Amino acid sequence: MKTSLSLSFIFLSRPLFTATLLLISHCIIVQSDANDLIAQTCKNTPYYNLCVTSLTSVPTSSTADVQGLALIMVDIARDKARTTLEFIDRELKRSPELGRPLRFCASSYDAILTADIPEAIEALQKGDPKFAENGTNDAAVEATSCEDSFQGKSPLTKLNKAVHDTSVVASAITRLLL
View 1: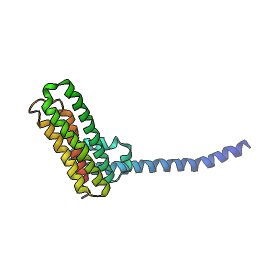
View 2: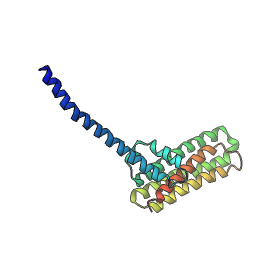
View 3: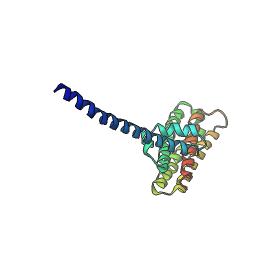
View 4: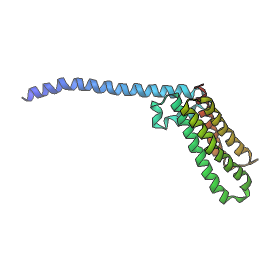
C-alpha cells in the first residue's frame, strides 16, 4: 500500500510539476508582453524613465492597451495637479506676499482639473485622441504658466515640473492613437 501510494505520488507529481511550470512561464510571458508594450510606448515620449516608472506603478497597466496607458497617465497627471492645488491652497495661507502668483496658479490648476484633464479623459473614452492630446497639452502649458508667474524663485517648481512632465508624457502617448 505504501509503495503504491509513493508510486502514485511520483506519477501524479510530475504532471502537476509540469502544469505549474507552464502556468508560471505563461505569467512571466504575459508580464513580459505588458512590460514590452509599456517600454515601446514610453520610447515615444520625451521622458522615458518617468513614463515607465509611472505606468509600472499602476497595476492595471500590465493589462492595458495603448489607450489604457494614455488614460492611466492622464490619471497620474490629474493626481499630481490635485496635489499641487492643495499645496497652493496651504501656501496662500503661509505666504501672503506670494498672493498674486499663487492665486494665478490656483486658477491655472483649477482649469487643469475642471477642464483640461476631464477633456482628455472624455476624449480618450470616446476614441477621440486629438481632443485628448489638446487637453493634456493645455495642462502642460498651464503648469508652465504657473511657474513663469513667479518671475524668480517659485515654491512650486518641483510640483509644476511634475504636472508638466506627466502631462507631456500623456500627450505623447495619446498622439500614438492618432
